[in-house]
Length: 95
Image 1 (tube, rainbow, N blue to C red):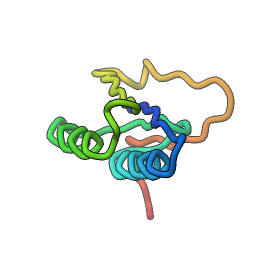
Image 2: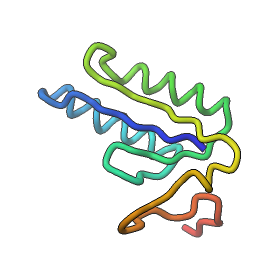
Image 3: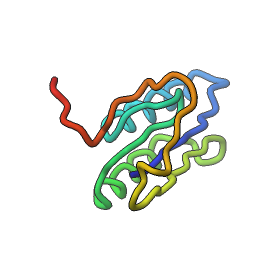
Image 4: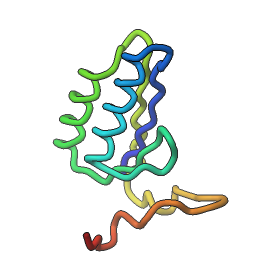
């Protein structure tokens, strides 16, 4: 389980575009749990690929992306207070 958080400078049109692109890439690998926070359950090789893609999107001088590795027993380390807006990513998903 990886928690991805990001802060993209959106003071110009290019920043707004980067913000959308980062969110879209993260959606390909996990679920949004806050505006700029994603929970992802992905193998190591996919993490490398995701980091590379995000690295190509962001402006490294003004944007920030952080990856938090929650490790084993991650479900005990995630606590929600208030409205639960996410789904259980370990359960079956019917589309």
